[in-house]
Length: 98
Image 1 (tube, rainbow, N blue to C red):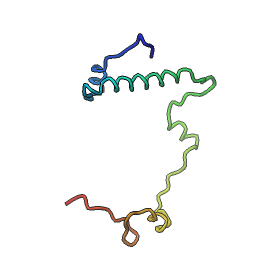
Image 2: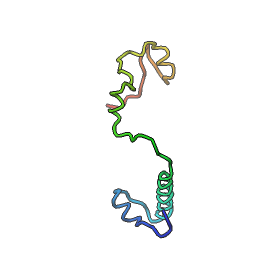
Image 3: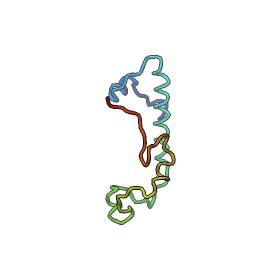
């Protein structure tokens, strides 16, 4: 984004439906400008000969994705090895509903 180009922070916040406190608007604006500058750099990437990706489903038809297989994990010890708490072959979690 060039120096001549600018945007209205209040308008951007209104479009995004966010509230930014007055003391943070300057740093927020700088952050947005930095992001837009970075996105602008993507226009310099050489894409000659690269086929556009139009759909993930298109590639699934080509067999690039694995089949979904339902299983129980196969090895309870390995699956539960990182559990902070367990009871037999089950995770123990805090009660969240009274």
